[in-house]
Amino acid sequence: MSYRQGRFWQPDVTVATVVVRDGQLLMVEEIVHGRQVLNQPAGHLEPDESLMEAAIREALEETGWDVRLTAFLGAYQWTSPALPERPARHYLRFGFIGEPTHHDPARPLDSGIVRALWLSPDQLRERAGEHRSPLVWEVVADYLAGRRQPLELLRQVD
Image (cartoon, rainbow, N blue to C red):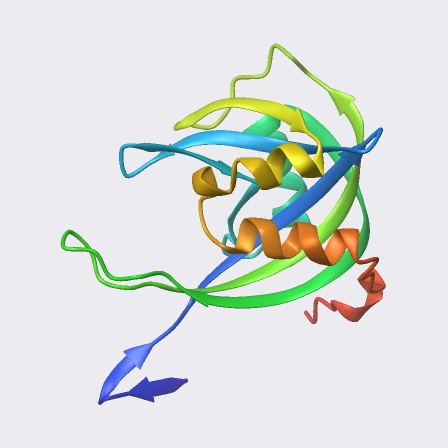
């Protein structure tokens, strides 16, 4: 437990997966706070779920793609700016690399998801103003730099 200025503090734990096919990245266009943004398939860790299970689930729910995780990219900490309608939020994102294995185009996507699409890294960079957060490019940059960690670094202890 952590206390800051006398109050309990806990970050939002999220996962995101860089899914690559033929040099293209699987991305999600979604509506967040009334704005259309780009993100990897990503979302919050749910109770009783491992980080890897969350990454696989989020990819399926947001894109209709089953993915096989191949590597761990890293952990990323970011604080969103405070806005008049909401306070700053603290995020701890776990990034993965995955490969697509099967697509179900008839699967309904999560609420708020406009569509899933494939973009080259250059196309994603050109649309930087649409990224949901700086974390979107950070995980891609690490992927492009060849960063890879074994999935065995993440252990679920029961």
